[in-house]
Image (cartoon, rainbow, N blue to C red; front, side, top):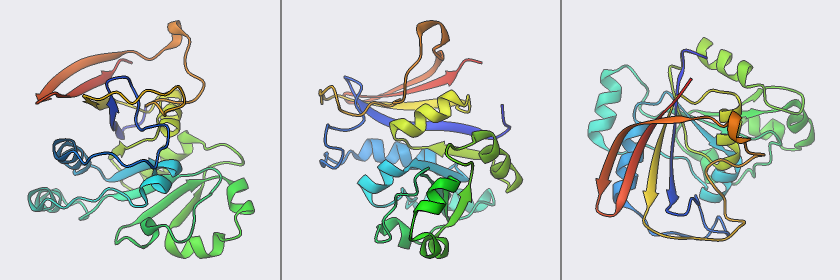
Length: 226
């Protein structure tokens, strides 16, 4: 395992969905969950987010709370974490608001993505494009690069494909799961961990280390068992 601490922070419904069948369908803003995410993100040197999530939301998460910004300054961190979008295909539109936010941007991609995207030259002016393999992303290479650049804390914000890749790469140290008191349903609605799944004997196991409750909402902190 890398010395880099990686925490997954995500919210899901009581029936285990991270969004409705239509990922662009709006949901009600939840101030308690937003404050929780902001607090967790405030410790990050780098945010990992999947391309599907950034396409759906348009922008990356940023810290606004003055106390959290002041704490980052005391710790010697930049005002905002680097946001690294993970996109093997490099299928990202140039008009994404994310690409004009006042933050440092990385994009983890593949050589195939770089070769197929006709906007690569323009994207290189808007974000640092990092080649992590021919057709698949090499997470060992990714973590070595992050370590070389002084990244100590990573917060992954989903979606399900990114989380699945990190689980398979055995890079997740702990999880913060918010349980919304709502049911979305739908067999095609995204779940926290997509991909091919695990057979029971090989499934990663977690240890519950903390539970918080605000109203009908639960915040569960798990540690990945090594």
